[in-house]
Structures are given as structure tokens and as C-alpha cells.
View 1 (cartoon, rainbow, N blue to C red):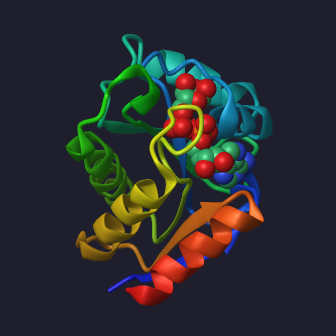
View 2: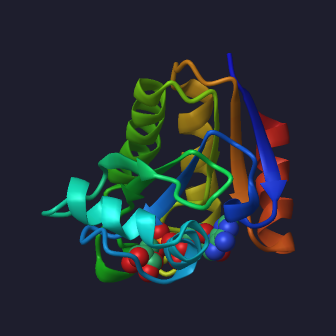
Length: 167
Ligand code: AR6
């Protein structure tokens, strides 16, 4: 089984094989963690998004691009449900984590860092966003050894850390 850990910091600085991006279905960049990943990864990430996802990506699905200038070799992009806009099907959020692990597995990645998908601009309630992340990542079988969930702020990290410790 993989080691599942909570980490406080900026996902773009993680020394892992793959980082997960909380993208939108257009797959052409955005704000939040998406903006940070495109800034740090450089233009190769957007170029690969355009080449590999000409029609974007469906909510709940995942796909990969190069990591460009990131320490990570790959970015696994996934599209979370937009709670704030009325997309409240939790199965879509669970699917983001499952599909991202599948894509990372296909790539042969051994280590991966996830943000809390949908928990920012998309407005998913934080405690349930944390539960969905930890429950799904702890239960999904994959070839990954090291799975990290990254919290940007100290207050989110405290809640995430407690949830990981609770199992
Ligand atoms: N490292 C780690 N976590 C981060 C970082 C970072 N550099 N930056 C933000 N977070 P969000 P969403 C946290 O809004 O809710 C974009 O415009 C943040 O605090 O990035 O899925 C996309 O293009 C929060 O806990 O993603 C979409 O349009 C979590 O990452 C839309 O936002 C997710 O927040 C997606 O919204």
C-alpha cells in the first residue's frame, strides 16, 4: 500500500513524479492551483493541453501533460465539480481522485501530489472535500508508493493532518 500523507506548501514545489492540477473542462489554464501550475510549468504545459485535449476534458475525468519546468515530470489534470455553480454530485469528486491515480499508474509514476480538488474557487465544503480526498486515496489500489495531499494554508493543513491521522 502507498503511504498517504498531508503536506503543507505549494504543490508546484513538490519533488514527485506527478502533480495533480485542479483544472476546468476547457483545459486552458485558470486561477488557483491551475494558474500556479501553468506559471511554474511554463508554456510547454499549455501547449500540451492544446495538443492533447483539443476539446477539453469532462468533469470527473483526468488526463496528463508534461510537467514542463516543474520538478514533477507530469501534470495529471482533473476537472472537479463546480459546487458553487450547482454541480454537487459527490461521485464526480471521487472520480477525480480515482481517475488521476489511474492515469498516474499508466504513466508509471511512483509518487504523486494532489491539491484539494474543488475546495477553492469551485466552493466544495472543506471538510467534505478533505473526506472525499482521504477516503478515496486510501481505498484505491494503485502502483503508487507515495501519495501526498497538499494544503496551501496552515488552517487547511491542520484539518487535513487531523483527518489523515484519524485514518
Ligand atoms: N499549491 C497547493 N494548493 C493550492 C495552491 C498551490 N499552489 N493554490 C491553491 N491551492 P482551486 P478548484 C489550493 O481554486 O476549487 C481554477 O480557475 C486552494 O487553497 O485551485 O478545483 C481552475 O481553472 C484549494 O484548497 O481549485 C478552475 O476554473 C485547492 O487548492 C477552478 O479554479 C483547490 O482550489 C477550479 O477550482
